[in-house]
Image 1 (cartoon, rainbow, N blue to C red):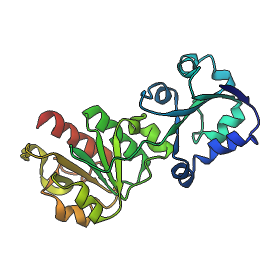
Image 2 (image 1 turned 30 degrees about the vertical axis):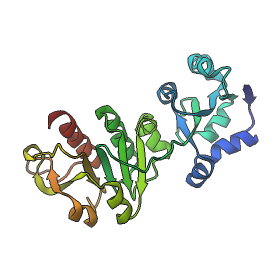
Image 3 (image 1 turned 180 degrees about the horizontal axis):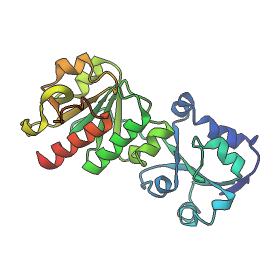
Length: 255
């Protein structure tokens, strides 16, 4: 079904705009996936409720629209002003998908990346993107920024739809979810990661801490090993997403 909307007062436009609010996203169970490559690369597993495209970009995104033509996915051709209401970017790409929020599977048996208080959406998105590249399909987010936000989804290049993101806010939840894992926490005071022996008999949980404060006291106490990336004198720390990305590649491809 196709529909053209040019008024920002339209009820559908107001609804799409409301999905920029966290509370509404969780209430409705829907997310906004924005951007040409992100929408094009949505897998068959993602339930796409609607595709919204600006009227002057219909031809540009003909391949995407054709994919959903004749399906249950609704297609809306909207004015630039309407797209500005829906988008949370300064310069909208001209296409947005409204998709069902992935179901959270609260069981983690495989290797997992643990985000301990990551507060920056860009860092969260980058870490998700790295996990997908490394074949890590499990992410545990402990007291982190909301992963359903547009900034995280764009930062991950849609990677949030390819992994199981489990959220937790208490030590008890984390303890249960990481039962059976070897926990390695990144911290400046840890041993050199390239000298660390990895136990291959159990899955690993690799932890990156908050951008300003590092890993929490809980993970400092729980970690089987505290590890660090070696750095030249004069540099005291790395960006959290960079550090975890380097460590993940080391664990997956070198260890």
